[in-house]
Image (cartoon, rainbow, N blue to C red; front, side):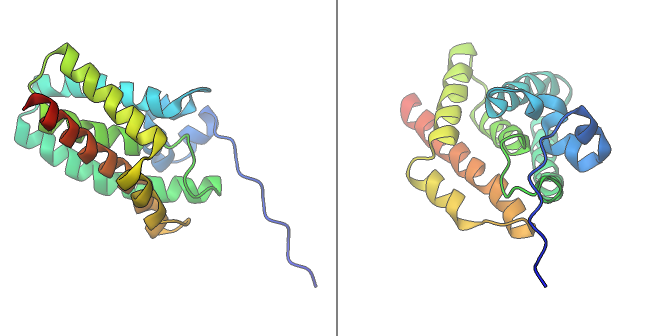
Length: 171
């Protein structure tokens, strides 16, 4: 008796996004469906969302939102990766969203040039995975809860590296 052939990875579309709440969250409410650069689009979405949210939420409330978004995102990323049958699909952008919210929350207030620098630093670190970011990406792999955390973890390390670079730039 032979084992069944592995099923190919699914390519997400709007139908997939709307099929489960985890998909909607993990794919950044549609940002992850971008045909090119979904991580960049997800980070831009995070930037815009943060600028809107800070108008209504206190710093404490934003911190609580980031914490809650991390826990919910862990579930959403785990579930969505499992449904897509890919350990860390590029269409999952919630990791960029939460990590960039963390950068902005800890680095604000800063003007447009500082925010743009934070965006560029974060994207370069997230995309190229140098040093500690690459190490973080290798630590947690798979389609279970460990892999779901891994989707978030390397972006948090990229966020902290971005914050370190911003701190050095400021001082």
